[in-house]
Length: 114
Image 1 (cartoon, rainbow, N blue to C red):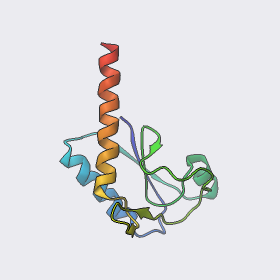
Image 2: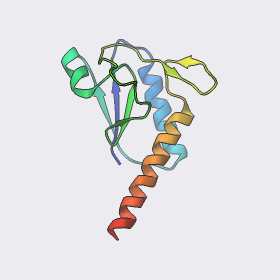
Image 3: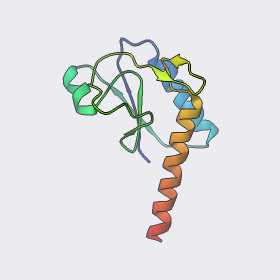
């Protein structure tokens, strides 16, 4: 499993977002390294499909995929939580679901190879 944490330094929530990711990983017993990527230019935002900070990719897939056509941007990101509230951080539940799904996919792929 490959985990990438992308952020734009001008958004103050990236440190808390990184801590939240690490906390959920610890709860799941995951010791997978996290690649931390600082997005600094519009070109980098375009290359990564970065729609705001923080963004978490697992195996190259955004844990909260944006609507089709959302333009890349150097900006802060808003996440819609299940209770209808917006937050600058993904909920622990969203992170947990994405990691659990990726773990299941990894285990399935390993079983198929065996």
